[in-house]
Image 1: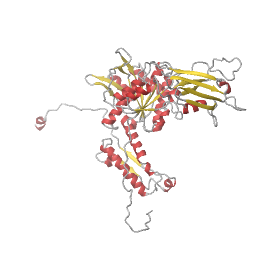
Image 2 (image 1 turned 60 degrees about the vertical axis):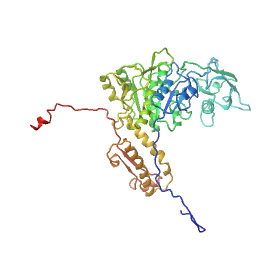
Image 3 (image 1 turned 45 degrees about the vertical axis):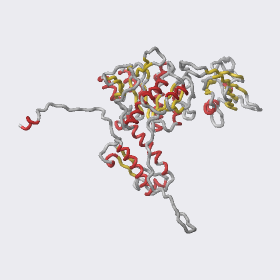
Image 4 (image 1 turned 60 degrees about the horizontal axis):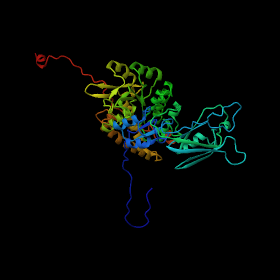
Amino acid sequence: MSPQYLSPGVYVEEVDKGAKPIEGAGTSVAAFIGFAQKGPVNYPTFIANWGQFVQTFGEFMPGSYLAHAVYGYFHNGGGSCYVSRLPGGGGEAEESRPVAQAALPSGAQPSITTLNVTALEEGEIKVEVSRPVGEDVPEDLFNLKVISSKAEETFENVTFRRGKGARNVVEVVNRESKLIRVAEKESTLSIAERTPAPGTYPLTAAATQAVVVREISPTAIVGSAEERSGVNGLELCDDVTMVVCPDVMAAYQAGAISKEGVKLVQTAMLDHAANMRDRFAILDCLPGQSPQEVKDWIVNEAGYDSKYGAVYYPWIKVANPLGNGEGIFVPPSGHMAGIYARSDTQRGVHKAPANEVVQGCIGLETQITKSEQDSLNPVGINCIRAFPGRGIRVWGARTISSDPSWRYINVRRLFNFVEKSIEVGTQWTVFEPNDPRLWARIRRDVKAFLTRVWRDGALFGNTPDEAFYVKCDEELNTVEVRDAGQVIIEVGMAPVKPAEFVIFRISQWAGASAVAE
């Protein structure tokens, strides 16, 4: 609608008819999940560099691979990342004394514990349990007061009940507390009988140099989006593009989880990446496996099949900062995430993150021969190999998908990049009048963006028309579609595939003179 002019004069109007450029989304932000000495538990924390990680989560620890993975990430070219610390590691305290019950059944043991309390920081922390004041208060309700030298927190009328209207103690405390985390122990007691007796329970979180895996379960590592915990808690971080969980192997080695537990966690990583559609899971193989064993594990036991993840073999050897100069074998996923970021920066997301040197790697758990890789590469197991005079390099670029269209890591990540960029860059279209003028503007902006992607070498074709197409017209947006409030845009791209097999055909030739005769 044109503005109204009521008095003579010169008027200047700003008219927005220009293109709205689509900016490329970031591709190089990793998220790590594992055990640490200290720091926030079950909450993704932004980390900009190695020094900030040490300040927030502590140094290297025996029995944990998180610090090694984050260090390898930064050392190989990674930038910022997120770290989510798992409960049960060093630097935290778990209430080990029995918590008395409000009403114990006949014959029950008073040593039964129904609530575990974990301190999130070092220092003296006390948890006070009291009954709510008032008449006709349900027997299952209780109050928690958390006292530290820095702050106090109060959680009133909490219960072990779940459901509508109930303030479940685990959900409330883990969502709101900055001082503790709580976990419910399995019990056959009734809801009221689980209620802890009034009293004061001190927690002491002493710093430690060794990780202690206490009853960590696969479901705790998988976590919950609502509680911001574990793998699923990474939904909070919109800019994450890679998911790494090296300490699922630490839990496996400690006997806290089984092979089935490893499969459950890694499957959750793949499902999370697929559901979010803008990130990629980097998986580790089990420690100490031979080439045949890792193939049997991936293909037959785990049975992974996903275009949103890749697996690397074998474990790599790095310098042990806590040892006497001897190396230590660690899962390679953190170093691989750094290589992804380095390749993205130097070449672009369309370049396969392979034939790259693994910086900081001084050896391999298993030396792989060409014939052994001949059996691993077709099933999507990316090998890390040592080449004389060329160092230790990533020698594979495949996903663990059975779909040939999504065979290569760079193709999947390129589509992640394009989809995320278009999604963010076209938010202005929402609630605009749904007519041919809008369709034309969408086509213009998306074509301009994909032309830049083509010029960067990410799409196959001598011209933009050969590399991609964008369709948004009346054929797609029929009356029924418009009545439903939808705008449909169809985009097709021809991604560049990596030259995985370079074949020179060489034969004897008599020469030009012999041909002339």
